[in-house]
Image 1 (cartoon, rainbow, N blue to C red):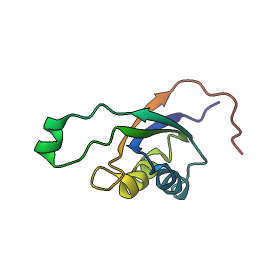
Image 2: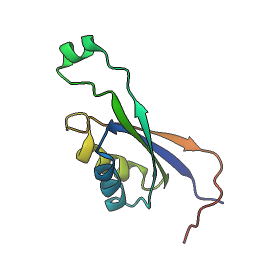
Image 3: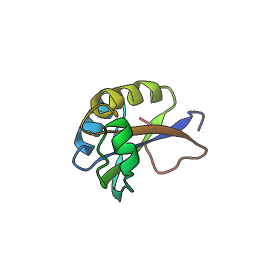
Image 4: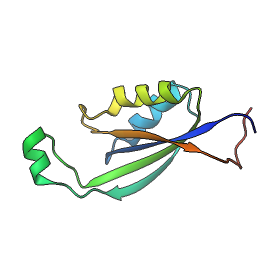
Length: 104
């Protein structure tokens, strides 16, 4: 397989995963996996930056071609970035090997 892939990881407040997936699909992603997580809020950060740390989180893993990664991440950031109610944190990691997906 010559195509290179990345996994985009998104951490958002609970209840915002649909917005993430809508934004990702609009930018060229096909789908993703959603898991539930719990954050460890820090009261000092809440006071300093004026953001509320919601302990219940959702984590999304979205496998995308390297060619659409930036577009997908920008779309997600616009929809649920830190300055929104989703307070999303978004990053990507390179993927060495992929199997079990159709590329057509």
